Length: 188
Image (cartoon, one colour):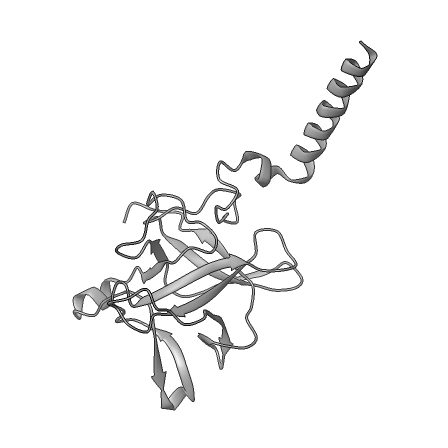
C-alpha cells in the first residue's frame, strides 16, 4: 500500500512539474509540431510573419506574411507543420499574383547581391525548405533550403541553413533563429 501511494504521489509531482516547466511539450498534440510564439501548432495555409529572434529574446517582425504547405507528392495530413519535413513556403502577396509571378519561395543567384537569395517564382516539388529546432531556445527554429537535383527522382542535396546576408534572407553558414507570429486577421 505504501509503495502504491508513493508511486501515485511521485507521478502527480512529476506531472505538475512537467506541466509547469514544459507547458508546450505537455499540451502539444504532436511532439514534432512547430510551435508559434503563442504556443500553438503552426498549421498549413494559415498566415505567419517570420520573425528574427535575438539573444535577448526580442523579435523583429518584418516583411510579408507567409503560408506553409507540403510539396506535391509528400505525405502528411496537411494541417500541422512538423519539424524536419519538407515544405513549400509562399508569400501572401497580391502584387506578385497580379503580375503572374508565383509567390512560392526559391533561391536564385543574384550577382548584385553577391550570391543566392530567397525570392519568389518557385515551382512545387523543386523548391523545398525545412524548419528545424534551433539550439539554445524554446520555440526557436531555423529555416533551411533543401534543393532537389532532379524533379524525376528522390535525389536531393544537403539542406543549407538560411541566414541574414546583407539584409536579405539567403543561404548562409551563420543561420539565425526565427519564430513564427500568426497574422492577427486571417480572413483576408
